[in-house]
Length: 116
Image (cartoon, rainbow, N blue to C red; front, side, top):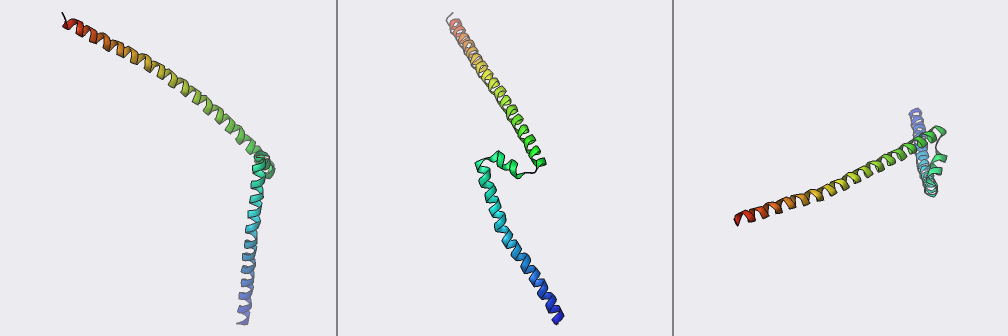
């Protein structure tokens, strides 16, 4: 029994050490995340680039270029849509006016024919 008790005690010490290590690691990670957040709010681009590896920095640069192109494409599409909506609005006004003129012309003819 004493042999198994010492093995159990050793296992208990190992799990206690592991648990203690995990408890100590949580505040360290939290502090590191807070520090990174503080740096990122001060200068987001530089702070993030400083934290990343060189390969990750290149990937970040590519992603920023892609984002810039996507913004340009979206802006171009928005301008196209606005122009088409403006054109539709102008055509709608012209068509409405033409319909009203045709109805008025038909009404005047009907009244004129009724008087004959």
